[in-house]
Image (cartoon, rainbow, N blue to C red):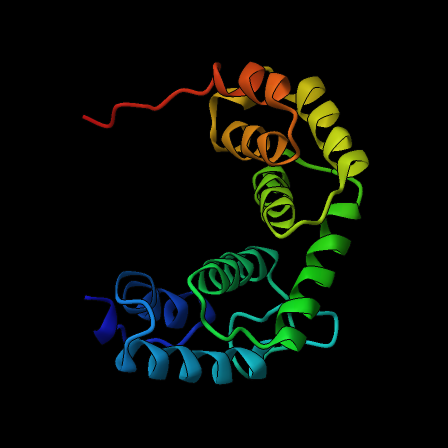
Amino acid sequence: FLKGFPHGCTEQIISQAYPDIILKPNTKQSKEIFQNLISQLRVRQKFSGGFTVWEDSDYISDTISIYVLQFLTDAKELGYPVPSDLFDKTISWATGFVSKKVDSLASAQSLAQAHYLLAKNGRVMTRELANLVEFLDKRDPYWQERVEGAYVAATYALLQNTEKAQEIIKKYKVFDTH
């Protein structure tokens, strides 16, 4: 299904490659797909380390940049040769992203995911994470029930704060879609 997608936005090129790279790690085919994708991502990465939706764009998308970081993190964990310059610039962008003042509930999910990915990559941003949690506690009494709660709980778990992680994740709800 994804291989025949007609568009070439950053989300789609990653989504097309993800199954082969994750499900068939380090096969000849997946290595070729990975290298091709890395070449495409290099063109879309801007000086700040963030990524654009389209190859010829200048607008950096926070959502896309976080998705790229998720992909690079997963690929690195599977042993793919993620170029350090590409990865380090992406980490730098994410560090700057979570350092911004939280200003809306709409950005909270992206910030929570970015915190999780930074922690997963050994980057500790405890002050910024505390700011996000404080913002969410004041603005949304149900945030722990949604994906933001799962990301924040996972971040605390990675930071070895099991008590805080458990406190948050016990409120998380998986909604039945049937």
